[in-house]
Image (cartoon, rainbow, N blue to C red; front, side, top):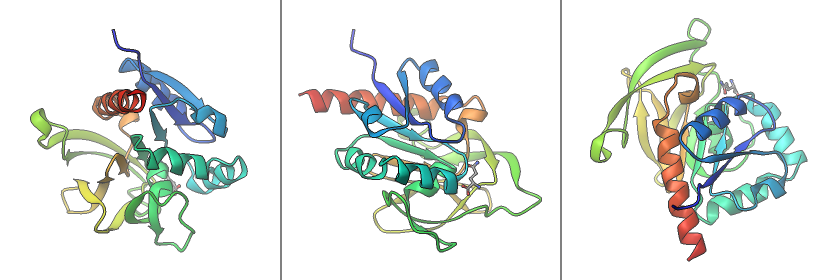
Amino acid sequence: MAARPTIGVLAVQGDFREHLDAVRAVGADGREVRLPADLDGISALILPGGESTAMRTLMHRWGLVAPIKALAAAGAPILGTCAGAILLATKIDDGDEPVLSLLDVSVRRNAFGRQLESFETQLTMRGLGANGRAGMLQAVFIRAPQITAVGPAARVVATLDDGRVVGAAQGSVLGIAFHPELAGELRLHRALATAAHRFARRRRS
Ligand code: GLN
């Protein structure tokens, strides 16, 4: 039986515990990532939701930015949800400096306004259905960012009914504006574990 992949979850702030639960629920090992050494040997990384301003400060303070970029450059699968997607973006509309610049998109923080600060909806996401077709997904949005532009290196993977983009991918990097881990949605974690497994095998050979 093949070894279980270890999936790191950035645990400096935010809802990392829910992601660790989801990682374990799909049969992978989860590891809290706080320091660069915690990245050693992981086969995928999740950047959770939370407060991106706090997360960016702690990531810089603890020296996590460069090693996470190196992990991505090696081809490790990376999933950013909500604040995590903000950390991945190459541009933040509010004028904040980008953090990881691993996903060629612009994001606008807290883009859904006051009445819609939190809402739950069904959306269509590419690659979720059978044979890589689009599938429906229940998505929870909490003071979520919107993806306002998608550059040539990235592609749209999730949109709301009104056309607003809430998910984009680039190579092994996926950024989504919503929280699958709060809706009992495990398919994205399962896909990440499969990709982690593949990455681990490639790295060993
Ligand atoms: N509003 C938060 C931010 O801008 C993101 C919210 C979330 O991750 N649920 O960082």
